[in-house]
Image (cartoon, rainbow, N blue to C red; front, top):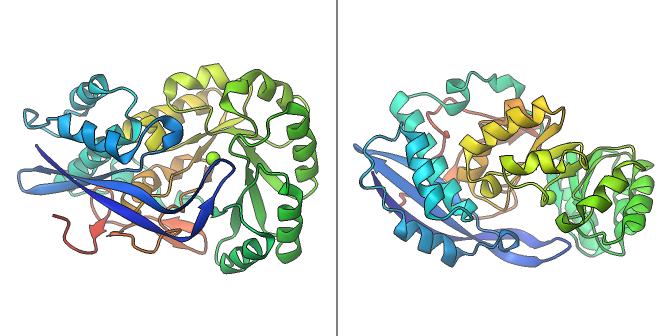
Length: 341
Ligand SMILES: [Mg+2]
């Protein structure tokens, strides 16, 4: 199999701010994996929060010599090989995992959701993310998001209540809140969540830093709405450790290194009675369409990364009235808008 890749800067529709960072463009590396004239596509969206940059992804891809693998169906062997090569290069490994799955689906001429026996009518509605901004800009973004029935609002700053109060003046739609580790004291987190519960908030994502797991377990005793782990859970082996502190997990392909691990995490979380959410980074339609293939299995979806950009190089999963719409095309169901070299 021949691996090539291309570095692309995804341009954001609005400057994207969360509790720890702010940016206008987002790096993405598109991987093409060719075997017998068929090309599978994958994507890496590296996150500095997890120690990755475009440079680390490119260095990893340069040393990932897949030429001696001649059968893309040998997922276990190939993915074990790349995992041993660099276990912590999660998004880079995800790019190869996604490309292999796309290749397999194309060889079998079947969409992944169908290969896995899933119902394409059972996809959840995706939330639309509202980043941190001035009150005026947030109001504009909320009005622009009228097509999306669920908002995911980024908080974790002193003006949290002002943001939510303003949104509640504009709309009564479902709000999910993501603090991105922004609340540093457990009392502050408790008081804010108890107030958010009065505002019709459905759940809270990552209220406090991942390093403060004991504080989050304390917090859980005092609040009523679910706490969903994001920064606290990367891969399958994290789930038992955090199960006592959270009610659910946010799985992202870029954290867990791809679809194969994500599938294992979904099954494990369900067995443990935890809610499952599928999330994303800022990604093109390659990464989003990959995650969407699993979406009939989950409780919540936050797969809007491709909606937040203006130069998506691929066409794939669609969102209609907020719901994810899978297609009948093989593999991930994605097509490059222009030929990818
Ligand atoms: Mg999050």
